[in-house]
Length: 220
Image (cartoon, rainbow, N blue to C red; front, side):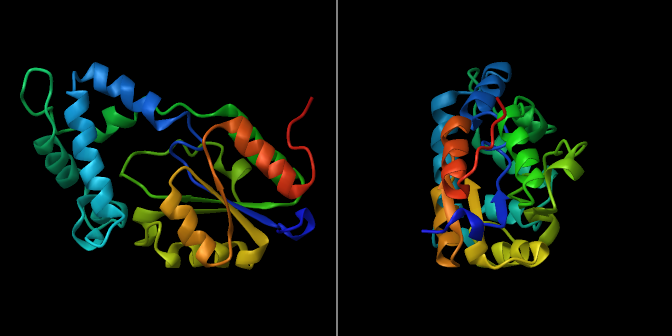
């Protein structure tokens, strides 16, 4: 087990980790666009299984996240797969913007990043992008480095994206922790020697970080 003194960097995901849970954000969009929820979940289950399985090279998600498919083409593809409660496809234009509109920031997780940097620990965002606009206003305060899949042509769980993040930080895998809400991504990082934290909620993740670092990260 890594000792706190050995941990010098934290790699962290965006959606569902530095934002409130994905299911809550998606629920707002499903209601607003009157999406058939059960059908949506089946479609996304199949797409995600493709993206993380042996057919990943042919997955629309895979292509979008690596920047090989543009947003307009993906929105058309996804809209054609979905149904509204009226039995028709939703409007394709702006679909991703509407889908991600409810992704509110998790203030506790953002404050932890600031606290980590106050302690001299480097931070790096490692996010699989869906073409959605990120709120980057305070990123200089939060991150020492930023790795967005569509901007670098690599995606999690490809080992290259983690190696790229480590190179940007100038740290070894054994000196870093990776926080993500998707287990295959954590397993991929672990294969390189990066310690993983499976994010479920802010309190649990912060407690695990405090235990690993052997120091408090929340101010009284």
